[in-house]
Image (cartoon, rainbow, N blue to C red; front, side, top):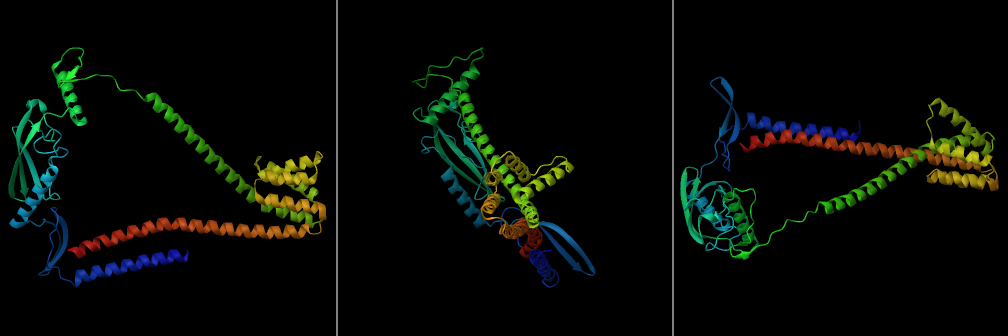
Length: 400
């Protein structure tokens, strides 16, 4: 186990022991003589351990919220009235011209004051604040009464306003007027068809069906889908190319090592590649036709040389076809060997093997560190869960 994990586990144990120590101290050393009531309007559950006269018991009960005094109740009521004054008329310009929806709430002052609404004459304003324009002709005086309840104390707040017909000159008024007119026609007309009015509120009205944009949406959807498919295919092709390059990279050390062994035994490079091809063909037959991309390219290179292609050109083609910079480097070494002879090739191949081995060690180390980093995420989540389980009960007991 890594040292970082051990330190994390030790930290968790220390935190747990410290918190449990505080809990033991509060239980056996600090007498519980007071319980604070919750500040909000909700009760809270409390657990206590009672002991006396040789008996002991654990008791669970609910502590009711703190009740406001008369002065506090009046302050909450004043606060509720201020909130009503600010929000009641909503988007309406003033109390003398109300035709938009009214903003009614069943509580104010952060829920500490309950509200019950009543309007006289009844029926003009419904429970959601909408105005029924068919209940009056032009203007109608309405009295709003809000009954405010603070605990068991009740206050009333009344004020008047004037309900008017919607203003056809505004977008909202036009919408409300036309909608109410259509609803009235729908209720009054029992025939198979509804004749749309040519005039509403003294204003000429024309009707037409809204344009159907399904075709346009389909075109846009097609373009978006095509773009997504193009991007997705491009990402997939990049991933495939990356996987293929990684595969070439994993096979490169084997090719360099085998080539170095054959050259070290005094075999020429061309013959060494022929022998590597023969060994690979046997390996492929034993493994059910499984292919190694680098060796498949090596077979193509050998076939090109047998067909009369120059070795330098064949090596260069081999380096390009393998889609990894290491093979291009090997092709350069082989081309230099054609010009200078085999004197330094074995030394260069040995050096290349050392570089490959070092690169492989770094890759393995990097992969291990990446896995360790990924493991820290669930370990951190586990630590968070443990802290929540330990801290929340401790904080609740301290609050008592």
